Length: 117
Image (cartoon, rainbow, N blue to C red):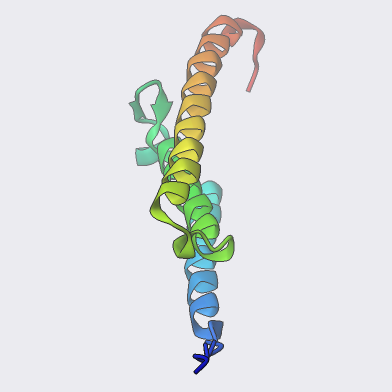
């Protein structure tokens, strides 16, 4: 007797809209913070950049992770592949962010006398 494999199609419309809503909310928070730029976040530094920049960096990583996890279907893959892709991406993002912060801070200090705001 042959066994029948039934593949039932599940609708992910609710999940897609939920993820879309969360990503939209995070984007709105980023835009609002970028427009109002609160002094308490903008004028205080942590590791050579403002708290506001750290918030943008963290929210951007959260959005990238959410997009990769749900829309690129990483949650359905095997754990090894997920780790290889996600951990590599997170490492590269952190590495590039550190380089940008270090070099940006250096350029800011060196070019301060030539910059008029």
